Image (cartoon, rainbow, N blue to C red; front, top):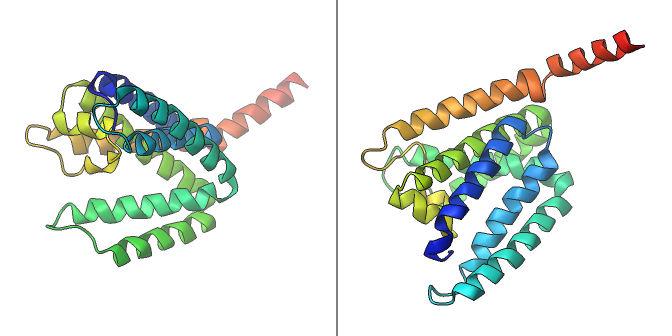
Length: 212
């Protein structure tokens, strides 16, 4: 976790990284991997220290973030499979939030494996969907934290970012799932038909031909 003074900056980083992932995830996949690696590594490393060690938390967050970003960049060639596995895990958690209890670890592992296999088969589309909805999820959590939602604020600064589920909002936050779905769908469409779609490539080819 991070000190209380850094919770709002952490939420802002989540929003910025989420927007980048949601709308430019396919085109800037390496950057997205580095950003999310930094976020995950920073939160995980800072959670080692207690609340009283503010300086240690910040240093650990920076070092852990750099290590996490470099690790995901090094894993770029298996990044698609990682995205697919992440989508599979997120899917099973979203499904299980509609019922009581947590999913069994075996179910989570099966969904992760299935997601990784599908991702390698439908690489381009899985990257677009995964980055769009993953970015939307991050934007919603970060935006809710900036608006003062206690659960989202805790998720933005703790190592357990996944505790805030867009499909299972806190009381008074009924807008969260709709914002998550709408933003994810918008990010998917923008990537498919503009920032990473065939239409964008066709427009570029026409421009090159006209210049020639």
